[in-house]
Length: 436
Image 1 (cartoon, rainbow, N blue to C red):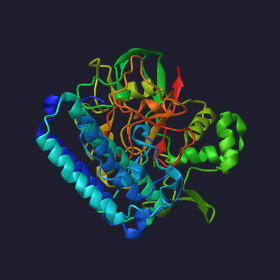
Image 2 (cartoon, rainbow, N blue to C red):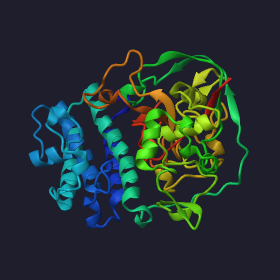
Image 3 (spheres, rainbow, N blue to C red):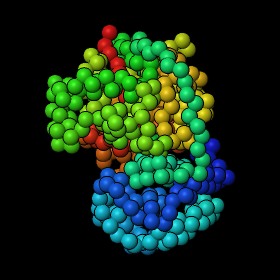
Image 4 (tube, one colour):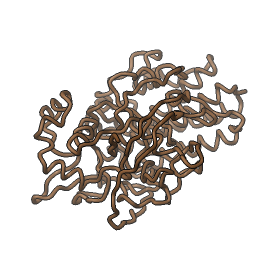
């Protein structure tokens, strides 16, 4: 992780902290008490665990800065530890929902206590550059869990969830789709490190790319349904060996949350049980499914370098920008992120103001996009935080671009998300690329 500490005054840090914590509370404000303890699958977590865990991370940060810091409770630390061996044996993720203590009320009391501790810590401690980086990591870690919480709320409640804020999705006419040619050559990939970013976005480094094409939009439900109707899930030749085993083992025949009602495909999500919208990006597909579709279509997934260049490189000015549209922060006119409060994907073509310099649209927001790249460190990678990112450098693929559940604070063109190849409960889609 890195940041420019000169830009992070005490007031700025406090403001970011309060804004982040308020958004967490807003996401769970309308839940019933019984909702907080339920774990509907081994891959998700009860809402109360997320609320507690993001607070516990601030304790680990304060402990790193001040070795005399005393943790709130050994019991809380044992339950809320996700995977940090340095703080003891973590509680089994798949069993987070089988314990009743700490109670939901106790977790919220803990949440509020940590608020007070962090605010006092920021106001009274003399913070070094590294200290500021650690505290900002806490903000961004909480943003990550806000998105994970949204995934879990959809799995837990779907249309029964009542968000505090909800805006209607603007419908767009069907637009023509095309593949865009991107010029190859040397490309400087990664983040400059001048603003906050994670260690896995560093350092900037040169990669060589051949000329390639990449789709203007993510693959839509209509396009994916054509793959399904052509026997995509029954034809082994499109699938990686491990993926084919997953198809058979789990009886996959469609994206997650899809089901047939009266002979027509429907999905169940925050917007209810509804017929598939042909013009929305396909969502809740694994890497295996994305890869199989690309093979069926005679294309392939882009590498993350190809994705990043198509998203952020301005060929005319010979410069890279933070976002596809430039260096200005995301707005609801440019992309569909959490603060758009649509609670679902927008149709393709909804955000022409967010078009990249190369002509690609919706590269930020809506769905995380699978790439073909393995999740590992860049050349010259240096770990910035024990047990945070680099311990996952195996059996994961990189996704780019954010989703409708990603907080604006979290996303940028260089951000690297990662999941196992069979994960589907995240808001994941893809776009195709091809060789020239």
